[in-house]
Amino acid sequence: MSSPEITRPKTRTHTVGEALKAQQGTVVTIMGWVSTKSSIGGIKFASLRDGSGYIQVACKRDRVSEEAFAAFESVTRESAVGVTGLIREDKRAPGGKEISVTDFWIISRADDWPITRSAVKSASFLYDKRHLAIRGKKASAIIRIRAEIVYAAFDYFVDNGFTLISAPSIVQNAVEGGSTLFEINYFGKKAYLSQSAQLYEEAALAALGKVFIFQPAFRAEKSKTNKHLTEFWMIEAEQAFANQDDNMKLQENLVKSMAERVAKNRNEDLKILGRNLKVPEVPFPRITYDEARETSIKKGLPFEWGEDLPTDSEREVSKDFDVPFFVTGYPLTARSFYHMTEETNDKVTKSADLIAPEGFGEIATGGQRIHDYDSLTKRIEGQDLPRESFEWYLELRKFGMPEHSGFGIGAERTTKWICGLKHIRGTSLFPRTITRLKP
Ligand code: 4AD
Ligand code: MG
Image (cartoon, rainbow, N blue to C red; front, top):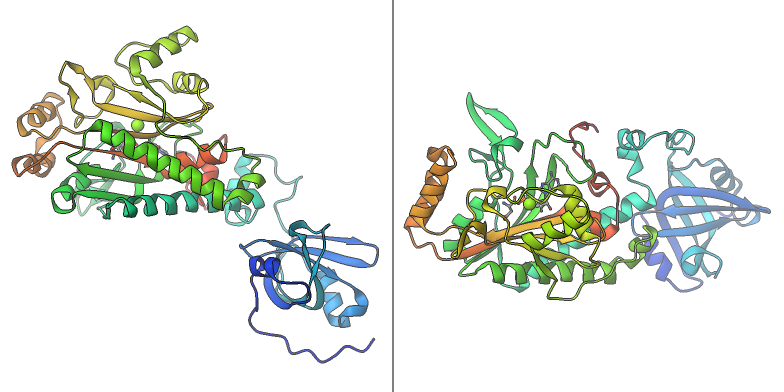
């Protein structure tokens, strides 16, 4: 068959997602990456991906030029290609549509794909090749879900009158204790990478009332676990004239809206991950630290009153729940210096952790802050903290500091729970852990 003259378009007419919605008979030009190839009888098939979806393309020798057919036959997996063709309804095709190819060309040919079943001997190999592995169906589904969680948070805060702020990542203060600080040399002075923007949020309150922030936090976590990154992104919020009860309400409504939004907009991605997500209703269940400790002891995991809830206990307690729940009233000894204590018991803080169910564990920590100058001074001095670097934070308490509260929720921990993942590293495009600094 003599092939007609074809002028190859330089741009696409449709994304894959748009092509999947186009009507039977529509002529489309799409561009994307070859995800898989196969052939049945004389027909060659490929699945193309461009980030907006996957579409099956079918190429028959007598419908295309010799050159196009040769290109289709020889194209390697992960090559970038262009396709022109007709949309055909086909129930057997994934997504119900297929492109019947009239032209096919290679834009950038790929070498032999290194991530094969036989090459993948460990998860570590996949993370060495993370710059390529993120193209996988599951890997990219997780990244889209994480994005949806963050969009949900932004919408939620904006709708509720919060202002987005930013804060420095190079700081002088430890917010969450000295043991996980990354030290840096700042022109000959000691500085640290920020563990949390909370103290800056508190300063912003008197200017803006209700604030939120989304930025990286750094923790020199020395232990290898499936829930710690050394660099992660935190969504934090802080409100003036709000107590710990208001704070928990804010958190549960936020987390509900995140789960709802993912269930609605990223259902396909949840399916790719095989995740059956239960969207929680508010109010979330609440148990006290003492109750959590009792349950843990009953399950054979005793620990001293005053210690932070150990990871094993947190996991076991959370298996009794199928929606996120709060653990309230942590002992002061398990909390950072800024926490306010109960009027009736100065050993117990007005704080809570939000724990994801089914063993996923802590996703958020929040609490009411000390707003009184003298109490905070006593606390800082009592804990031998360097008063000079907290001088500005203390001074806020001299210029109209009302009752206030806030929390921080980890974007990656939340994604881990919503996606139902065993390990946190898959929630980060390029994770940083104690053993990983590459790629
Ligand atoms: O519980 P954390 O340490 O609390 C704070 O930093 C408070 N200052 C926040 C605030 O009140 N504004 O951290 C908050 C959340 C955790 O619940 C967890 O989701 C996440 O941040 N997180 C981590 N995520 C991944 N890797 C780590 N190493 C994390 N450390 C904390
Ligand atoms: Mg915490």
